[in-house]
Length: 143
Image (tube, rainbow, N blue to C red; front, side):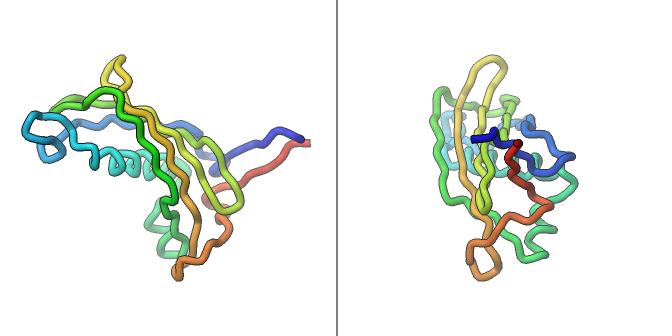
């Protein structure tokens, strides 16, 4: 089988890094980030990765195209703490006809705090699965 070339579109890199400063409201009384905050940060990473392709979720949704999370897996390795500056690396891992898979790594300096994976499905306004539009990406096989 021929190798697969994955791309959102030709202008988009497959990896995006985002710096995040931990806010007080994201922490418990001990200054540790609550586990429910991490999925929000993952969405921030996906949003910025998509934005590098000169498109965004708002324009997709206006066109009736929605990307819904169908799978989320996070492995917490070390706690993030109040006021730390973290780096989130979001990577386009795979793309199918109707789905996109991302992987994530979250660091504080040299310490890896968490790793995660998501799968997104493309749906229309009624929630019916549909093909990914060209402005999001393509999956091509080389010969």
